[in-house]
Amino acid sequence: MVTFLPSRPGRLADVPSFDRGIGGAESNVACVLAAAGHSTRWVSRVGADGFGDHLVEAIGGYGVDVSHVRRDPARPTGIYFRTAGDRATDAHEVAYYRAGSAASAMTVADLDLEAVRAGRVLHLSGITPALSADCLTLIRELTAPRPGRPLVSFDVNHRPALWRGPHGPEVLLDLARGADLVFVGEDEAEEAWGITGGPSSIREALPEPELLVVKQGAHGAVAFGPTAGSRTRLPAGSRAAGAMGVPPLERSREWGRVGAGGTPSGGGTPQAPGSATHPRPAPAQGTYEPALEVDVVATTGAGDAFAAGFLSATLRDLPLRDRLRHGHLMAAAALTTPGDLAPPPPRALADRLVALGDTAWGKLRLGPGWTQADEDERAEKEARTP
Image 1 (tube, rainbow, N blue to C red):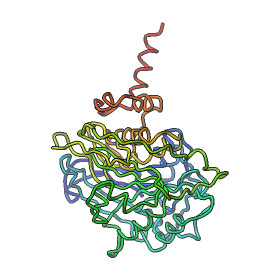
Image 2: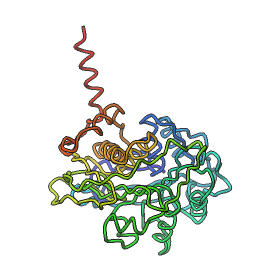
Image 3: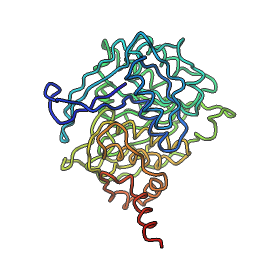
Image 4: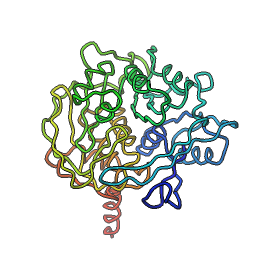
């Protein structure tokens, strides 16, 4: 969908103008992964209108394959407006205009499911099934057990304003149980499912996914690997097999410095500088990595960036600790820029930071422009070379 971000803080009623951008959880993830050097495809439906043109051209401009995006002559492209969040509370207004949109008309019959399932990873979100009954049927089909299916990644993304009726949380839990990799915020799990016991309790409620990532806002994130009796959806010989192997479960660290920013949990917000926060020890069976201290510019898109960073590291078969750290770095890139999408750090820079020892990682503080550090250093070296 098309996103309209305010030109200045204030109520929607008071903001005089907005800047147009691209939005949507799945397309955000595809764009970040493409910018990080991966081959990605976005499959969706937009209107045969100017906003649809903008989305296809802008997302394609990141290097994403948009050849399977359908154009709907009868329905408009979805749009939404939001206000600038307050740094201390992330209080903001959001106005969705998605009812009857082209994306809400997606069905099992009118999408190329072979193209959808062609990759090594299929990333879905809990926003799409909230759009219509047909969209829910589509996501149920894509999360259903199927021989040789790609690794199915599912970001819960609970958006109460989009669900019609009281059963959204139940639907999201059911869909998450059909995925191989699930991202969910600790606060999101409490809001949607009433789970208050922390990451271990969320894992108890979601034992089915091979991998579960619980985001804890400014504190960090916990990743749970395979459990006894968990299923493996990637059969030997499939195109996805081998590249998606999960390393042995690592013992979690039970310390961590809490930063001023970090990876938003669910659709939530990193805590602002000066918040009274305390380190949270991870459950013994999970791998915990603290979030980085970040000079936050805006929180939009950070959750999608975290998912992209974790998926990028998963595609590279890195250990769970490194996957979490790559997620935090991608989120930090988004948090230090004003829009939904930010240039990711060069892979060499990200790998160098991920390889830091625990103490050095805990001392990192990232601000606007940090992703260009390698390019600036290279330019200085070239300028000094005779």
